[in-house]
Image (cartoon, rainbow, N blue to C red):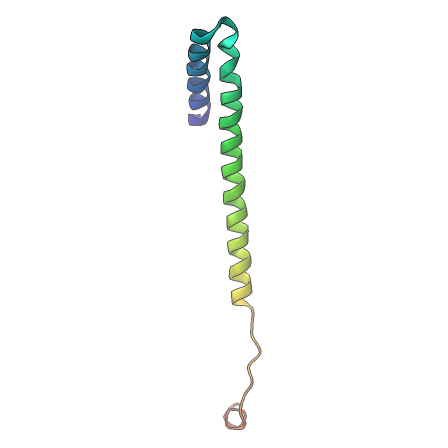
Amino acid sequence: MQIAAVILVILVVGAIVGSTLNFAGLFLGIPIVFIFIGAIIGKEGFERQRKVMQMKRFRDDAKAQKVQFSEADKRTMV
């Protein structure tokens, strides 16, 4: 709901600024809204990708690693 309100405000402000420049300037607000929507979608995409990469790093760090036991270690293990 907040995003919709912000988009409408940007559209209205763009229309006002555009109409002061010339009559057809009403359409100045439309590209501004598209840029804003693209920025929101891009931000969410980058955030999702960052979380995916973080999970991959966590999985790689949690993998079992092979350990070489010495003879003394082998004797103490049951």
